[in-house]
Image (cartoon, rainbow, N blue to C red; front, side, top):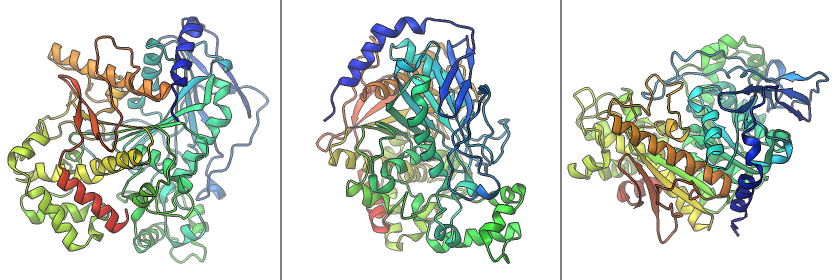
Length: 572
């Protein structure tokens, strides 16, 4: 079923189109889309064209607030300028060590549904380049496509250097209570999961318009990290796994098709909805949705702070529980690249949300205090806790890498155990089960583990924490957008190793987007081949400073298996 014609296509581009990438024009780039002519901005430093802040839907303001996105049907006669990023969508900032956007300057506005296109200079409509579309993370509560930590110029530049020129696309979508408010009034009006519908409309926009920028709509890969990867997963599962031809491959970093977000009971949805009504003065309104549409945006934004809004089963986009859908094969069976970081759970525990974890009861509080763990039976909660308590100190030490079992009294004696559990619950168990189901249904899947501590992060407390692969995948050598450049080190040999890891990851990701295999990365000094994850050979490719190697996907079999069983028990 999976031919190697994409490889031939990419080689054809290298042989017959490479001279055009050397062209350095200074004139403004133009693209003619269905709405009219767009004028972008040339970037001489990277030899690229930027088309920024392009609307893909009508602004969700006024009567369109709390409505599904509406197509941007407006045409313009004069050329429209697309030279600066659009507004960020309104957010409710998180506080996660190693990720936080606090102090990152940006302007938020409801009029935020835009896309950005980054292409190599000289690209023309007939170029038909592969497209890599990135969906940002941030817990679905914050984030933006203009976050320079997701700078697509580095990826596009690397794609040209490796001979497989690629177009990068990013998008904004509604967040927090603007995009994921639910409750009876919302659900009955078929208005849940608006942020996912935003993303879906952006994917349709790409199909309709990317050829005008020189992209091939039949060769789109969707990519995301954290809640962006969870979003990728929902698009794979959407409408009972219906293939709408919106993408031909998917990349899910620290997240994916099996997430715990679609399980908020209706009673809890309604409680949060009533909290919002109370905070905005809409409790007594006969038509609460109409009242929320008229409420000052400042009131809504204030009402959403310190709350978490997630997707829910709406009977359309999300028709049922992800674990069941995966088991039944109700997903789009495109090639999938999926993986996690070694210390996914450290940032969540180190944030102090659970206090010091010293005793088994403290560890159980972590199980019950995060996500739907509180809805599991007491027996299931206890069995999960026991799986992690029975791990030997030697095993915990080995599985933590550089992170200490107990970095200090403020973290607790079971800090290491709690980070392993939370990382497994949120990321490793869903990743393993998703890979197993892809293999079960004979769809290509590649699994990885990232085991590198970047610059600026505590090896003893955070290690290879959540979000830390981003700079490596985007080949962000200078650390643009980061407080401390992740690929820098005071040790020259370590810095070389950091950059080498980034080179191979970036190129494997680009190879996957271009050829559907990560193994055409064109680095002569690297010989490793990344095998598919299979029922009879479940393996990860592990990225480390010292080497990149294949390992069996067998870490913490008991604990992860018990978590997967819990997914089925609760129907996650």
